Amino acid sequence: MKVLVPVKRVIDYNVKVRVKADGSGVDLANVKMSMNPFDEIAVEQAIRMKEAGQVEEIVAVSIGVKQAQETLRTALAMGADRAILVIAADDVHQDIEPLTVAKILKAVVEEEQPGLVLCGKQAIDNDMNATGQMLSALLGWSQATFASKVEIVGDKARVTREVDGGLQTIEVNMPTVISVDLRLNEPRYASLPNIMKAKKKPMDEKTAADYGVDTALHLEVISTREPEARAAGEMVADVDALVAKLKEKGVV
Image (tube, rainbow, N blue to C red; front, side, top):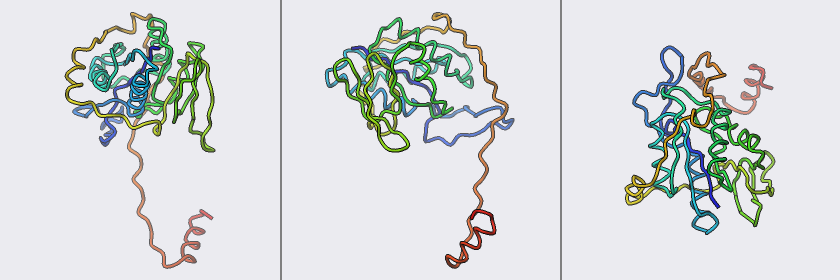
């Protein structure tokens, strides 16, 4: 079975995000970028499935700017076999909308014919949590979201999902689209030898036009601003004083 793993280039999760002075968006100048953490988990899961003999080939794909090839090299160093870079924007500040990404991924899936698409549940830059679901609908495939455990059982995938009330286990028919959650696994670090080997692994470069997909934006960002600073707390002498203070502020 072949597995397709979409990965996205985002601001590193350790970096404090800065908003541009004019409020037009997030400042990406001289900012460290890395693979979306949820996508790292998806890559790790694909590698573990390959190590277990359930997968023959892992194909990583990224849609965005040319600089995303660095993200793909990380996926290759972790253990992916080859990569596909689809250039859909020239400006690093332009975020490709989920439906556009899903349409491109649909074309890639039809070309590659994987038995499984493993993706992160959401990207930490826009938190849309929509691409996997849209891809499933466009392909007419089954889907399982927020996966904290994945097992392949014959022609079905058994997935444990994290839901509000706890855990839910479902079975879906293959091929399927699975979006993964934080507690599925702990991604490995790429070793230096594997980083060197990744430079020789194949990476195809294509454009959105090659797949006949229009990347025109349909959403407009009106403004971006920092969250309001948290107000300082107040010390109270005892529980009675606390209740009185809460009543005063209309909380209780």
